[in-house]
Image (cartoon, rainbow, N blue to C red):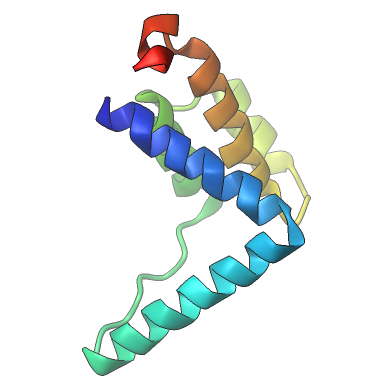
Length: 105
């Protein structure tokens, strides 16, 4: 159930980010986090490399490591928003794989 809620929240965020207003929301969230981090003398981690990112997204969302083909396809993509596209694709695949009973709860 926790995994389903995480997927739904992530998908809702993806849908919101696809809309112009959604980008404003993510900017506001980033600003709130930056302010809090500054108040507490914290720093964010450096962005993950594409190799680590593709592996983590698959592990976190579908519970498995990306296949060789999925990894090669992602790493060879040149789109600026390839990470958002990957998250959307993996979320949609994960939701399609859920049993119907899980979706009803």
